[in-house]
Image (cartoon, rainbow, N blue to C red; front, side, top):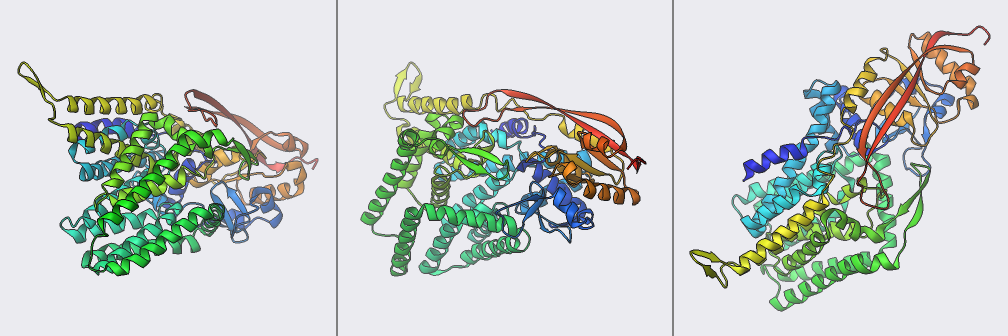
Length: 617
């Protein structure tokens, strides 16, 4: 069965969306991977930026009003932390782009390197799907494993983000590898030290991929305290050592190499905690009770059965109330509002009250509610094999189904659910169906001639069919569509026509304009100095003229991209050519599940400035 699945997975996950352009996380990751591969470090030194006059730097850098440790950025995702030194600090955490850099380098760079980076996403999603399958199989047996594998493989979000080069697929692989191996460690499967070490490495590595993994620390803190109070064993050290080292590494990286991103995200997290202080208070009270209770249970592995039942009933009740409120009540009593968005310099909607319903767009309503019921059943039967899946799945579900913390345009925003929430719902749905099948198997067997029919088995298979059909129907359009096919080749051709050492000036003052979109790959993949003019050129004419003369006197070609009115006003001579970039992609929508495919045509007008100015100047 796995061989057949792998053949199907190659088709599902290894047809990548060709997101190479900047202005959005996917293309920024690709460009950052190429940059790391070519220059061997995470932080970037831009000599051209450093050699600019302060006035010219003001022209090409966009101010950031509320970002700690950085007041401007060069291009989206690339903070400027020391303009005079040309120090540029990438936005993201390092593990994903470093692995992309390895792929880029092994493939030889250029267009082949970009394609290798894009294919790497499919590798992680294939492995992530297998990790969820192995977890489901350990938790519920072969039937649950097979159902989880099938449901996850055909789900819209799994397929879509298996082709989308952000960090979610790698996070899913590491997180569920940790859940699988951690469950085996806690269940004392042999060899326990190997399973503990694998879990510690996998969970620790998650902290090097995504900064929002910091919300996991309380869960692992309680886990390690429980292991300590029950009697620390050698396998526990095999878990704790790599986990602690990798978490410390992530914090040190955040402080020293990703400070703007690190401290901005931490500040946002503390702001959310301030708004949700009742939940924080409940969590702290629960943690205090755990810490009070654990020392008194030294040597005793279980709380009294009656206490266990009470706690489980409370937790299940809270989860069911939360699901009912999120699906039925919250969408009716709240309304969409608008909030300012610094990046786009406009307003974007806040749709958190519809988070449950919008997840249902991609899992189907039956997928949502079988997941809720299955997680409640799993919580009632909680054991050492399931405790990590439950703790992490419920925690991420509780957080992101309350506040998705992202620009809610689809399908982009659903990436928040890919590492944990969506696989958790599918696993729990499979667990519930598997429990029904296992409980009713062989009961009330009816013989029809030589055949024996078990109505319970038929009921279970019918439920599985309806569940899988719901997930599959919700994936229509997402499996077949591949965004931006051929765009890598088009951008590669554009780069090939530019002279070596060229300085590219994009005359577009949009908050996220052509310079941000196309300048990002041209700068970080192909090595051209690309700058977006953040101010109208006629307002900074003398500064621009001086910079252009300096570059030309140093033998560097200067290419002006965009409207030529200022060039004509300044009497500059130039030759013009045009480049067209065509792409097709799934539409973006704030109000509904995307269904349409948009065709976009971008025309870049390139003006090659002559080395000398007109004498009338």
